[in-house]
Image (cartoon, rainbow, N blue to C red; front, side, top):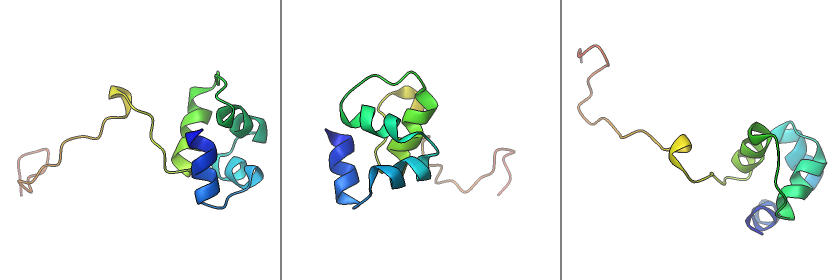
Length: 75
């Protein structure tokens, strides 16, 4: 349901979302219908196009470093 709502908010057609995500339109339809998608990368691309992010540690955002230091310790 979230996929269809996000697509409607963006005024995207199924074909447009599929083209932007580089997937077959049937993947978008399947996601909208709540069906399982075997290709996790395709699913992630569709969700990214629609501004939806999958939950879970695999997609966790790293903590913001406010020190201004680089990985090597320099500034």
